[in-house]
Image 1 (cartoon, rainbow, N blue to C red):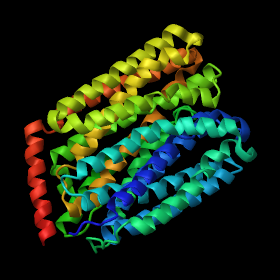
Image 2 (cartoon, rainbow, N blue to C red):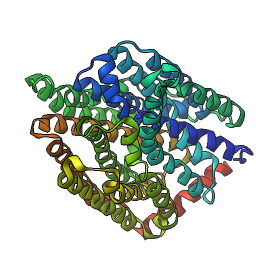
Image 3 (tube, helix red, strand yellow):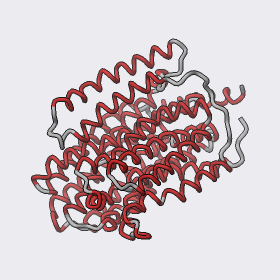
Image 4 (tube, rainbow, N blue to C red):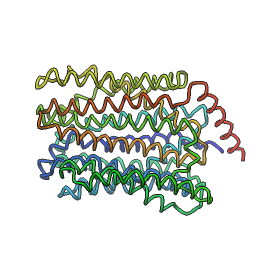
Length: 478
């Protein structure tokens, strides 16, 4: 396939969209106390404003990836950006918390249509020599956007531009969305889709039901006193996912187009990478709690809270560069060391929070926050590369949807899980509640460390990459 002459410009537009998505995923964190005061929301509503976006995103990503395979990445990217920008306007104008939560979910849906196309675009438009560089830009957008979101949220909320207050954190997406739409129209290649089968609506319904059965009780259960139905609903998620897996296998045998092709799961790099990635992104959700601790517990302003975590960006950039250079050479050993850095940094944050109490300040958190960013940048760079290393071109959309779904499922799970732990322990004081949430996050990272054993080793990864490169060359020749 001939290289598109504007592919690097198109990548810049695509990465901008991912960056905006991740910023919007986290931008509300420091504005939540302000939103709570102005709209009169409860604790569970705060979790829904944050987790609703990630949940809408997660529910749509796999479908978005398959629609991209079917109709072409450019069409779905543009459609997703239109939905995202429109929902941002609705969120910025919301006068009731229910409207705001609904707009946040629709924002997530728009991102779920848009973001899978980026990884698919990279996989199809860049050859084996260019792809590592392109993947570095892509992987860097996730942690940088995730940690720049609170900073931008703090600046916009405190600046009160045009007397919009917290609404500016959503309205700022409008000019960015227009720029991305124009850029995509001009630079992105219009490639036809690979598949023409009917969409797997049965699988979509089962997947949606399973995810809802987990997340609704997690977010709402504590405030309602954990009624019996909430426990039953979470237990029901297990058979729902089992039925979904069976449905996917049966559909594939009949020659249909399942949402998650069972053939993808035979790749150790993808299945193992997703197990680790789910744990990593769940553990990072504890920063939602740290933001609440600084503002509600210590009286930090939105901007002060955001600036506390801003230095992590330094670590992210360094970790990303290290990942690009060392991950292909060291394999899963590099991933494991990166997780250890994350673990050590989180433990250090917990110690500082507990030891200093109300005397906690930005300087005491500086070193562990930078260390956390270093681990995040390194581990995500390595995991994105590993996960897609064996994927063939015609599988890119489905695999991209699966990878990004894992990221968002982890994010939504982390916010719901740590929010539940934090608010349940708040009666014992902010320090106790925050340290308890961090302890759970550390446990999740230990699980991620154990899962790295499922990743392919250095020699195996190199052999798989070479084999996949041959398959790509053969497919291009045809």
